[in-house]
Image (cartoon, rainbow, N blue to C red):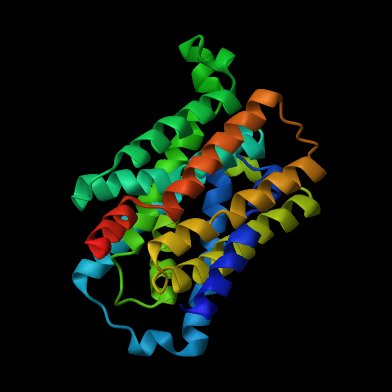
Length: 296
């Protein structure tokens, strides 16, 4: 087991867990905040790339570059959808739904890699979605307008894009972490520049800018370098377990600094979601098949 990669991933997830709190303090809408994040991350990662001399030894393969560009689109959409969810619901609820990503990774594996989903995986998926309904609130599903305004759709779309990011990045092996993240943040700048409303930057305070730069250089540049540098060296199960550090930190910060107090049904929903995901990643379908083949 690569202990160094485990430490890097744990640190990146712990830092990323504070992004919800930082986002609420920036004073920027989702699109504009992600745009600034991409600029900061590009500067940070580009500088590291040049300082380390990695750009001189980079091996460029057309297939890997195309995968990286696609992964960059998924990441940008993931960020925008997650931040829009933060605007509509509490950080804890949004993060809980966002962390359905491992379940979606299983679904992607069953569709594109012909990996069969067992009864346990199917049950876990159903339980997770039921838990999502509980934490958002059953009353939010009584009309389409309430449902759309609840933030549930944004958080769910963010989880899907996060799963697509993990699924795609696992297939990129030749490019360095610097090149990988540098290209992806460039993609973000190109996509979001024409969509950004620059009047949103008027009247921002020094404190706002401190949090904005923090989300750009720390939560994007530094964290995503650690994330992509570690994920390729770790088994999917280990990655799926360590990403739980993110929601734990996020929920703690939400409760301590933003006074989030979940209802009984919301607590039940959070337990259902994380219990099902944790069970699924610790006991994947192939585990049972391996045990069965070894015993025979």
